[in-house]
Each structure stands twice: as structure tokens, then as C-alpha cells.
Amino acid sequence: MALLGNAVNLAIIPARGGSKRIPHKNIKPFCGKPIIAYAIENAINSGVFDEIIVSTDSQEVAAIATHYGAKVPFLRPQHLSDDHTPTLPVIAHALETQQVYDEDNVCCLYPTTPLLPPHCLTQAYMTLCENTNVRYVFGALQYAHSPWRSFGLDSIESSGSVDSKAHLSNECSVESFAPTLLHPEFELTRSQDLAPLYHDAGQFYFAKALCFKRQLPIFTPHSRALILNPLHAHDIDTPQDWQLAELKYQILHT
Figure 1 (cartoon, helix red, strand yellow):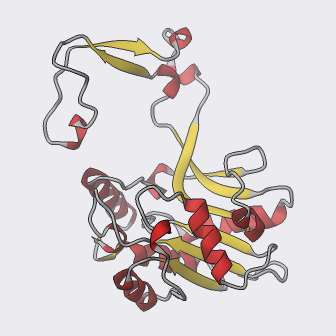
Figure 2 (cartoon, helix red, strand yellow; figure 1 turned 180 degrees about the vertical axis):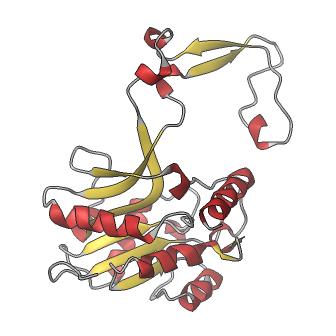
């Protein structure tokens, strides 16, 4: 595709080496190749980017990233590579190491996005370029089950609270609990009559470099959400998430 204007278009993929819940998650084989390879290839195939950079603290991640076509011009410092480091400081650091102008277009693309089609990145880029008052464009998903009908579980047994991680095992959790509706005003409302709610899909954030440099908040009225097909995004935090994402990928590619 033809790039708009004279701005440079840069993709930055934050991919640190450590991961506790899924060891080596960002380079773990996913349906035949390292999962980060899909993000790199999708960025290339979108036709948007002049350069694709991976921000990592790992030589192993760097080697795999360069093999699939990305550049790794620096290694990320350790203070930006722990479990608690937010995304915006990582992208701001990457921009500081490169000659990136405020008006350049930057996409933070997560490495665990194997389901995301390249055209979503293209559409997000076009949305950003065509709306000068927009700070960020990001992928969003509609909640499959409306949070308006959500409830908390308060244990009424002396044995303790409800096991919030029971769903991660192969066993069902049997607890004695009392549900407390968070929005009791909607208890009798039909689910189809409830207003839809959305959440960040955790796939990408597209913005002018200045927004990332200043670490401006993403979820504001100055941003735009690109609503994704549920098959095109899946948050991968646990082994069960990984299995479900692979099933989605197989559905999309068979």
C-alpha cells in the first residue's frame, strides 16, 4: 500500500525473555513456529511499516526476531524487563534509542498476536492518519457475557475464600458461596437488552510517536477503538489460553 505523508511508520514489538506462567512465552512454538514470528510477519504483510523493531532483554529472542525479519538495534535494560513494567515506558525507551520524530507513526504490537490479520493493522493506521485529533487507535473486543450481570462470590464456609484459580486446573471447584450482584438494577433485564461493553483486546496500540514519548493515557475520548472479530484476538496468559488460541488459529487456517 502507499504510505501517507512523509512520516516514518515504525512497529515496536515488546518481547522480554522472562515469563512465569508460560516459560519463554514470546518464542514458544505456536502451531509450528515461534509465536513472535506471527507478529513480525503480520507487520510486514500489512504493508504499513518502514521498520519493525523488537524491544527485548534476551539474546535468544533477538536472534529469533532477526531471523523472521525484525531488527533488534538494542537490548532493553533490566529495569524495564520485569513482571511489573508497564508497556508505555518500554515503548518510550525504544523511541529514545532511535531517531524518531514526534509526528512519526508508531505501533506497539504485542508478540503474542498470532490471530491478528494484517489488514487490522492497516485499518488502524488509516484511521490514525485520517483523524488528526485522534491520539491512539487500539483493538477492542465486546464482552461475550455482559459485565452488567456480573457478581462476586462471598464464601460462607469457614474453609476460606473461593479458589479463583480453580478454572485453570482440570477439576471443577465446588464451593459454598453467596453471589452478590454488582449491578442489581439489571437483575431482571434480558441480556439482549443490556448495552454492549468492550475491553482492550491487548493486541496493538497505534499513535503518533509524541504520544508514546509523553506516555499519554490510551483509554481516553481522544482514542478510537477498532472492534475486532473474537476469532482474531485472544489474551494468552495461561497454558489453557495457549490451547484455546491454537484452536482458534486452526479454525482460521483450515
